[in-house]
Amino acid sequence: MNKLLFSLLLLLLLPVALLVIVTPLDSEKQYIFGLIGIGMLFLLGLNKSKKVSVIMVVMSILMSTRYIYWRATETLHFNSTIEAHRPVCGGALCLGDPAARLPANHLAAETHHRTAAG
Image (cartoon, rainbow, N blue to C red; front, side):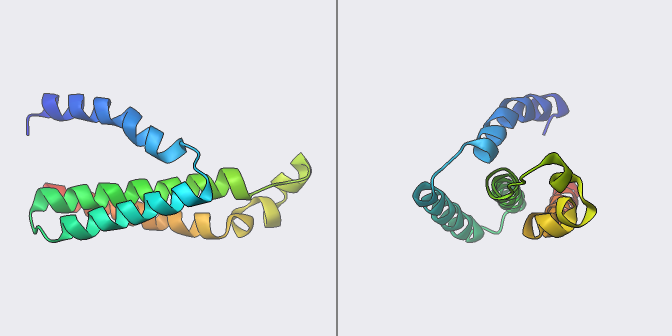
């Protein structure tokens, strides 16, 4: 793909990706979003094309990043700023699952890079 076309496509799809990540959904809509995403990944998995596998990795990263954003913004509540800055509670121990997913997102991005590079 032409680098200029790729850059243009990336600029156009970046706001869409940001919307997917930060749009607030109630639990029922989040559940439906997850099921649709899993269904799409299963259907895409039937095709063994390299381009399709890249799309699957990007979808996986988007869904995982959405989850991390939701956990960080909706489920972490601190009573004071001091509580948020304590190393034990304000650090990675309090983030728990979202902090554990960051390396998984990095690994998925590295897989995407290696798959796209061929």
